[in-house]
Every structure is written in structure tokens, then in C-alpha cells.
Amino acid sequence: MPPRPTLRAVVTDVDGTLTDDRRRLDPEAIRWVRRLEEHGVPVVLATGNVLPIALALHRSLGLSAPIVAENGGLIYRKRDGRETVERLADRSIALRALRAVRRAGLDARPLFTDRWRETEVAIEPTVPLAAVRRAIRPLPVRAEATGYAVHLMQRGAGKRRALDRALDDLGLTLRECVVLGDGDNDVGMLRAAGFGVSFASGSAAARRAARYVARSPFAAGFVEGLKASTVLARPSS
Image (cartoon, rainbow, N blue to C red):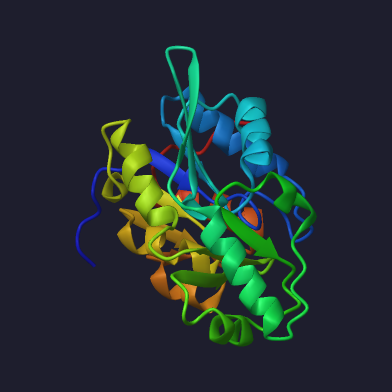
């Protein structure tokens, strides 16, 4: 492998990464995140979840870096006490795709949290991804399965694109980051990372894209990956 670049920040997915298999936040993973922030290592949340959920976690953890939400559809920033949200995708295009999926006879039911979604549509993962992709083929939309939902988003949007913009605010690139994720929607950012980490519980595509695949699943793999990255010495008890 080529030499590792200097690692100066951490980018992490949330569900399945900072959580256990029941989507409960893991205390040890949270302790590591707080320790990173205390040592001046920015932690960027890059999630497919809606901004209100990501922002609540961001505030509870005392984070300072931008948030990438809705799979890169939104970037949240706080500068000089002023909060802003940048939209990078058009939800009307995703809604057209949802109608096309339903016209194809698929029982596409939006997630409960979809009422707060601004740039994409997330439907219950009970519909076959291949059938969804066939239904939306004529539209400028792509579909990604995360294990928790099937996301319909404007083509060209994604975590990788949004992170390039968000990290620029910090004077950083993905090559200077440890990136941790478990889903197909994390593949782009894992490939571009200085040190990409997935887990035993990650999707096949995420594991292939990662530089390091933790033996442990879920949040335990997050902790294992951070230790392997050497971005920060192991926090004391």
C-alpha cells in the first residue's frame, strides 16, 4: 500500500457506525468522538438521516464541524454563531421518482422521518432495489440501499460531493481524513479517504471500498478502525 497521508479529521456515518445493530448509540464510540473533538480533531457527521436528527446528535456531542445530511443533499454549517443550510439536490426530482416507482406497482412507503426530508425521498427497504432502479431509469435520479431505507436522490448528489464542499471550509480534503461507513452510500467517500474504514457488518461494496475492514461489527468496528488509523492515541479510561 502507498504511505498514509497525514490524517487530520474524522468523517463518520451514523446509523450502523456509531450505533449497535439496533441503532442505539454506543457509549464507547461516543467517548471516542468526544475525545477526538477535545484533542482538536474535527468530526464530520455524514449521514443519510434527516438534518434534525443529525443536528441533535451534533449538539449533544459538542461537535464543531459541518454536518452532511440526507446523503449529501444538505450541508449544515455554523460560523461566527450563524447557522446556515446549503441544499445540493432538488427534492422535486426525487418525488417524481417516487411516483414512477408507485406507477410500476411497487408498494413504496416513505419513512416516518421523510416528513423532515428536504432534498431526497427515503422509502422503507421492503421494495426490491433492482425493481426501483428499473422504474426510475428514465429520470435523473439514482437509488441507493443503506439497509435502513432505499434513498431516491438527484443524480450527481452524494456524500462524496458534499464532503468536498464541507471539508473545504476546514481547509481539508478527504485524503486527510479517516472515513468510517458501512453502506453502499458510503462507497464514494471511503474510496476518496486517506484511511477508509468499514466493518464486518458493512455492505460488500463498502468493505471493498475501504482500506481497513474491522473484524468487529457496527460501533465496535468504528472504535477498532479509529485505533488502526492512529489518528488519535487510545483514550484513557
